[in-house]
Image (tube, rainbow, N blue to C red; front, side, top):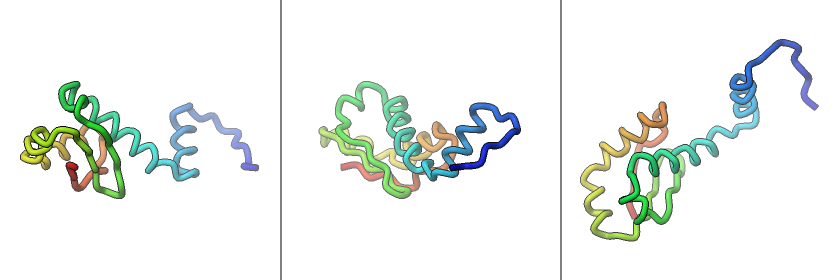
Length: 98
């Protein structure tokens, strides 16, 4: 069992330490990316989004509309930039629309 520290920590610091020691950051990034996609794209795109998956530094988005997929493909770089800004760090390097 881990040794207890007697120093006072804020809850946010304790949670950050817990995430770092248990290597949970990648899993949280996956959840945060899905939420950021939903927030940035709005209901119109979310209605046609069937899957959002982050693997390494590539974001895979599965869409049920080929017309929307083609339209979004023109602005891939802008979408990646907006998502990274929303997340506060550069997690995504490449966007693949399926």
